[in-house]
Amino acid sequence: MSSENTIPILVEFTGGLEMLFGDERKHKLSIPSKDEQGNAVNIGWLVKYLCDKVMKDSRKEMFVLDGHVRPGILVLINDADWELEGEASYALLPNDNILFVSTLHGG
Amino acid sequence: MAPALCANCKTSRALIIRPKNHQKLCKECFIAVFEAEIHHTIITTSLFSPGDKIAIGASGGKDSTVLASVLKTLNERHNYGLELVLLSIDEGIKGYRDDSLETVKRNAVQYDMPLKIVGYDELYGWTMDQVVEVIGKKGNCTYCGVFRRQALDRGAKMLGIKHVVTGHNADDVAETILMNLLRGDLPRLARSTSIVTGDATSDVRRSKPLKYAYEKEIVLYAHHKKLDYFTTECLYSPEAFRGSARSLIKNLERVRPSAILDVVRSGEDMAKLVPEEVTGISQCKSQKVSLSSADGEDEGAGGCGSANGRSSGGEMAAMEKKLQQDETASSREIDMSNPIASGQNHDRLIKKTGPIKPVRIESSKKLVGQTLGTCKTCGYMSSQEICKACTLLEGLNKNRPKMEIEIDVEEEESSTLRRRMEGVALAAG
Image (cartoon, rainbow over all chains, first blue to last red; front, top):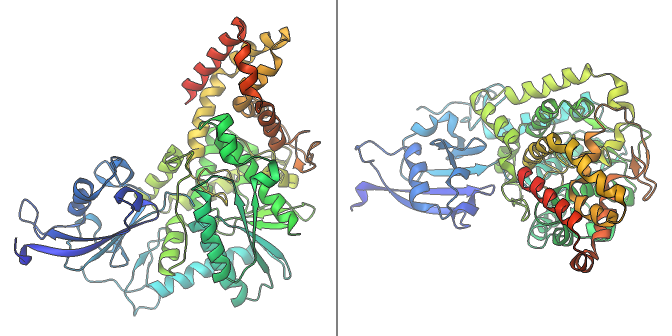
């Protein structure tokens, strides 16, 4: 696969979510630039990808509920709230930094 | 999508959209506004006086870390004249609290504040690890919550401090309001909405300066200020956050972000309608020690997986359990009174009913006016003759020799009862 067909991104998990991803906070990923239908990959696609390919834990519902990021988990795209960026429909760009922060866990 | 500009400075890129009003702010303006609002809360409620010594209930988690950071900032910026101290509780859970206490120790250095750690072992003679050995993994949250509330008071007294602040946020308060509404607990509804409990005559007052701060903004504040905080799940109550009141709040926020503050304000308005003789609000300092229930309570200070008392949602699960238990409560009373009347098995019954006891005590207390006194056993604030912590301790201490006693006695009557109790526990679990 040539580099034109993949894009590098950095995905981070904090606030307790790292527990679902092998206790690794940072994940450097190389993801396809297009989904199965040939559309540019977006956050919605990434979330499913993370669930299917990256998550080490079987408790998917702690990250995704009813096909959406679980309420109480914040998503920051390059430090900006994803609500400012179109949420799940945000099309990923090379070197994007996507941060998932759980507000649900205790201290 | 073109990047939005900050609605405040109109120069930097907006990174935050505020849940309460959809305002788009840049990082610097968000931090300034967040701090200004906490300052506003503190000023309008006359929370502190110059010279006050304040203990910050610190768990190393996001809420208490943000609280410590903001209070330090505001104390210096606005010359509150406060002496701030970090107060941490060590429940004695190996592999859980150790790491978060390390975070608190770092915070003490970062914020240049003295740190006091008080342990359950020194206060009660029991670590939570030991309690779990006796009680089991179910129901031990009751003990932890009751012990923690008194531990904060005792820790404060050791330091000669009369005011403890905790990191309860708007989400916590909204969750507690919903729970108290659902169970029709008017005294607690009233107390849970007030920013400060206790008055000048109290030994220790409690307050929650972050009461109007969204959990989301607390996390974002910690993120953008790069605060050092720790996240963990209590080993004995993993995923306690999946309680349904918590989920409900988060789902409401998703649909309409202002809902959280709306619930808080509505709770405050409803609380005003509760007569004083029901709330006992003028003497409400006692509730932290003894009126707070075993399962979900007004301060939320018993949240599993949080040391300074962030309500975690496990309380809702506990409440559901309690509701189920309430349904069977009357029949259970009858079940148990028979063998008790017969006398012989008294000790065993106490043991068997130990973990469920607080629920029974509480269910008969609804809407009874609450007055403050002191516990006959430990002398700490209590509305009952014996405070909840001492009641639980008594049960625990009786349980210590449990193993030997139980093996040799095997009467039909009590094993039947035990089976019944196990049935109840299963149904409730």
